[in-house]
Length: 95
Image (cartoon, rainbow, N blue to C red; front, side, top):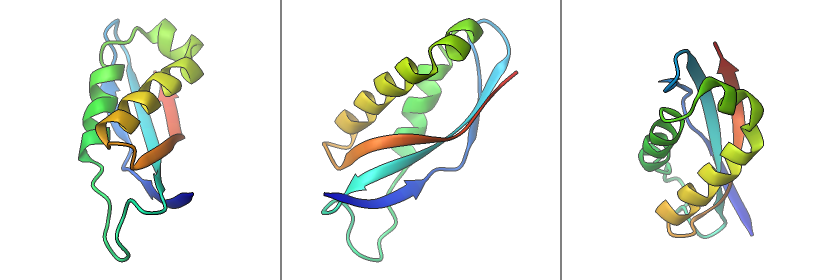
């Protein structure tokens, strides 16, 4: 069952081929994942975002946005041992 949605602060990532991406992500936790009143820890997700997108080329970021989200989502779900059931882009700006 879906639980709390936790929005991470957007982060600017330098892309491998030049330019940058400003990306914001929200994490959809499972109902049982976060104790009431406790704020989820987004540091693992932020680290995964930086590591995945800093290796990407600008053309890949522009053309494969959803494929990159799917790959990132899988990595985050694994990192949080299934406590996260999905992710959503809240911001996605390239330059």
